[in-house]
Length: 275
Length: 293
Image (cartoon, rainbow over all chains, first blue to last red):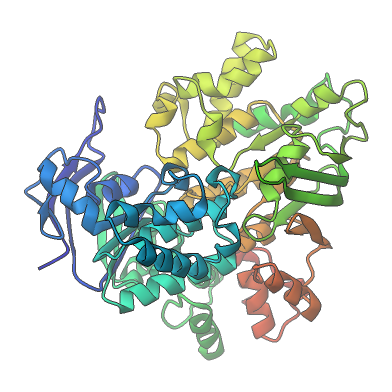
């Protein structure tokens, strides 16, 4: 059974003239890593909130998250337990008096034994380099530290699926790599991950990329297929990974590379073999 | 007159001295700590650097290294405990310092912190109206600012700021700052949450503001955009300056970047791996393509 089984999903904000999401289909299976991209205002964060059971769909033919019906209140409440959602803005996610209490918050709500909570919190603080900040009040953290604290709190709770809304946006390059490694590990453990991002190079390893355009699906498939359609990429307000942008610039200068490189290594190979 | 010319009018503003488009910034030994119940948290320690008028400086460093605090101290939102911030050579005790502070624009890391009016238009107009500009001038500057950041008035002026997406809010916050025609522009992670198309537009806007002589201080984790836009680099580590000056991609420079959780820009790494001089790496894909064709 898919972890997300969504068909014909609509969502319209109160008082809005148009749907923020319109007739959207999405299926995500165990262990899948699905990247969601799109211009500002295309509906990515709205989709993340709906998948987490935090908003009621305006309409849908089918809207199941971990088997729970998102169209009914009980289903949404159940989905909130099974789907971990990291918000785009960590300010909206930090609730406790200090970092370690925040990371423990979800586990306390699930009534874990105190000793187990302690072990799990220690593990998360170590994973995200937050040990020295464990007693720090959230409002005294930098943007990147807040984002790591929020992510640690979401990941602390064992789940089957995570919805991460731009989890690396405020991180320094090293922390970004650490989060990407953590995401890869969780995927290896069988977790499904829906990953909203504006960083095109982060989509390269995804099983599937879904590109939104004004709330509708403009593309769903392999990252390489999206990036190969340059006109679509530009229309959607997206870009290519740095290697791909350079390949395009070279093509404009009359030097066509074999294939479309999307990573540094692919680019170096293509430059070496280019005629 | 284009929207950008309206905003970059600083250079041609008759009320300003000739050649005063960009502001000179000197930060001399600035230190700052945050008060907390248990003990103060030191955030900046003896930070010293200089940014020439019209210069562009990338402010980098790990999360929590003091970048946002430094921008707030420069903007005068927090007073340094010791040391001073000099704007065009003037310090806080000098006559006219408050006026100079008004010519420093800061776009916060969290844009919603600087949005408060009930429409996008009123939000951008807030600063110019407070300065008592005639309403016709306010309207023209607001329209230009919204246009420059890609939120054209016809579609966005009457929207509620909180009904905008995260990336649109960030652009609106920038519009509010540009409307004040700053001579020193401080940007705190301006590219976060912007889609790649909007990032390209913002890079274009910042390049044109630079060309108009505006001094630019850009706090960012994005080394590629920092390399594309900024002539020099300032890296903070735990509140102290660990790198200040031109970009340095020697072995020692690379170690310093890595030690501060940074990496080389993509084009610099490419140049190194192609056996070329990384110090002469191109700043953009177009420049790189020209060199490789």
